[in-house]
Figure (cartoon, rainbow, N blue to C red):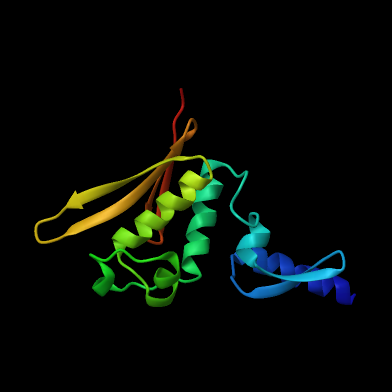
Length: 143
């Protein structure tokens, strides 16, 4: 009966998208894994466009911290994780990750009256996704 409760707990955590660490036993070794890594796969690889966008968003949510003071700075991924960033750094992070997964990816600058905003768009032959910090909006293209 214990195993049933444990299985139900794991399923509920996976379905909720919680990002707590759990130990996954892999043969003789043990590795820490987040729910995102279990729900999708370790590096968001071999997923559909929509699942990739969701996986990347969940990965970003693990360290997302808005920090406007980094807006005009070029910072490393380590600095982004430690200090946080602005729309520019988060869209560039999405682009780098998406290109490493062989998606078409680009940033779009939006001029507003008193400021600018940057978003990322990733696409493949099935459609496109707009990634705006922790918001995503995907569209299938029917040809």
